[in-house]
Length: 202
Ligand SMILES: CC(C)(COP(=O)(O)OP(=O)(O)OC[C@H]1O[C@@H](n2cnc3c(N)ncnc32)[C@H](O)[C@@H]1OP(=O)(O)O)[C@@H](O)C(=O)NCCC(=O)NCCS
Image 1 (cartoon, rainbow, N blue to C red):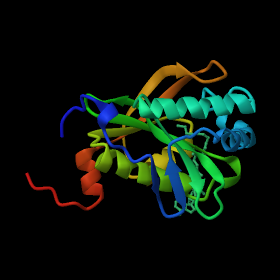
Image 2: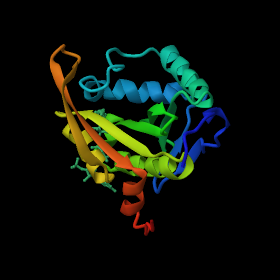
Image 3: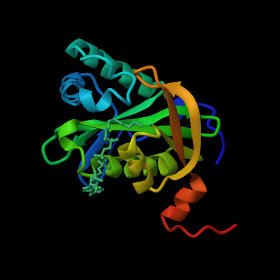
Image 4: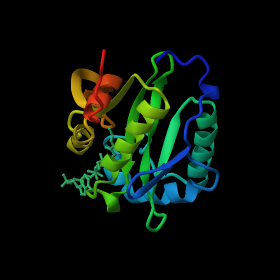
């Protein structure tokens, strides 16, 4: 694999499925679903997600999905919305962020609406997005970062097969202004193929 010189020309599936989820890029009109789920989940999100510091207005959520759709096309950020297949309910957000196309490498982020926590939707989504990153986008590396106190998030990374590579000490501050530590979980393409049981010959 090689560095991707012009990511705009890369064909990236903007909608795909896992067992229980439709996972797709944001579109105009998604704002209401996102707004409702964020409002329901603010208490859970606030300690860990810097953007969850206020109750968003509907217009703000709609602007944000439209901006997300634009950034997707520009390959600046690949935000992905998770919808439950059975009833179309918006489950939460994920995506491939902080990309470096010269590697290429990405960071997967995620959150789930409060009423659907503890049902395995996020692990399912992270596994499917990991497949897309390595198989469709030629990633050489994918990482997941979380606050060391965020046990549920670290558990998702481990369940999805990511290895703890490093702990950064006092690399930022939490919403209360206290210093925080960050876990970095990573997966290389080689580790991904081994995880998938693909035989590697060199
Ligand atoms: C971090 C966060 C996304 C984890 O969500 P989650 O619901 O715990 O994760 P999953 O959807 O993978 O569900 C895992 C749980 O479902 C259970 N589960 C049920 N069915 C399952 C299945 N088919 N597959 C996997 N797990 C399943 C697991 O046993 C686990 O249960 P436990 O909580 O008792 O250990 C969620 O807590 C959240 O949104 N937090 C706020 C935002 C945040 O912190 N984001 C991460 C920032 S780094």
